[in-house]
Amino acid sequence: MSELELIMPKMGESVAEATIIKWLKKEGDKVAMDEAVLEIATDKVDSEIPSPHAGILTKILFKEGDVVQVGKAVAMISSEVSVNGKSTDTAAAPVKSESVHAEAKKTPVSAGVEMVKSGASGKFYSPLVRSIAKQEGISIHELESITGTGLLGRVTKNDILAYLPMKGKGGAGKTTQPEKTFQNPSTSNGSSHAKPTISVGAGDEIIEMDRMRKLIADHMVMSKHTSPHVTSFVEADVTNMVLWRDKVKGPFEKREGEKLTFTPILIEALVKAIKDFPMINISLDGTTIIKRKHINIGMATALPSGNLIVPVIKDADQLNLTGLTKAVNDLAFRARNNKLVPDDISGGTYTISNVGSFGNVMGTPIINQPQVAIMAVGVIKKKPAVIETPSGDLIGIRHFMFLSHSYDHRVVDGSLGGQFVRRVADYLEQFDMNRAF
Image (cartoon, one colour):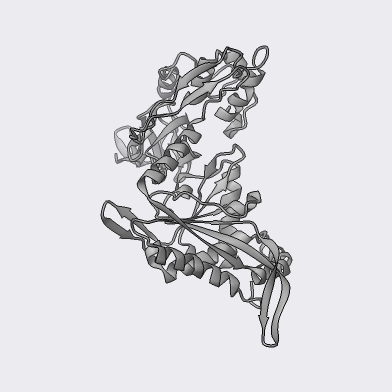
């Protein structure tokens, strides 16, 4: 009998572990190739892990609630089983046995915390949700009454945090105590600078960061400590791009079934500039420069929770505008509906952030490590401008947009950083009004 390991997959460059939320199969169950075996959660995405081959789930190595390192085996799957002493393929194998069911029922459900993993309804509660519930004095009965927005109605951390203000009289999470003073603890970045003293007055609300926000905060501080940031700005006349998109967006949607936004057009120009300046598409490991072969564009996406996630368009230089549009729309939709898988957020080599979607004119983005540069694009605004013509200068109304390019000054000098953002602007300004879509 051949046994193969089911490995916890890579979650992304900044994620080294994941929590097992739910086993979808039991020991002894038959598993088809690409069939989901378990549900996991990282700080960025919830995902189902499929089996890479068909067989029988012979051994589960970790319990629900366990945190598992990327690359470790979480289960064993046999490619064949022994029946009456004879080897046979899994298609003829029994799906499960009563002893397996009995063993599964004996599995402890506490996972090291006092609150049970599931209530009478059968809903599973993640370690983070149980921890918040325990800290806030929320009973399993109360948890059962909370409407979950997660997968299969699971209560998420956002659901329980939204419930807290309604718990008890006067709302939870609001302090009515006399003013207190807290000394902000040192952060994980190793800084020896004195931290400011924070005063909390009567009526102030104390809100604990969720785990994802804590990781984002740590990642941003780490990036600023790692890379000396420099930002160059260019204002681009994007009139041709705007007019072309206005002209073709209706026919494009009718033909492709996709809405044509500005994002794929901007990514197309960005990719062209990266091919012109490949030393933007690098990472730095100590004093070693890693020049990336693939151009994988991360697109910063705001979530309904207010947190940020960066799904990645792999090999963006191999896609035409239609392909980029489909990729952008698909990733944005799945990000906002918590449907991304770990591979969707890994492997980025350059990131773009559309601060214009919030009505901002420009921004100074923080580099998404281990990349060395990031671009923010601002809102498109109409402005009066001087238009040069063969018969003289005229005043006209044009569409302008600011591009902000932040880069790691250890490896990207002002010349390269400035030329790169200027080249992106050039591609946008020279947009062909007569191009097909």
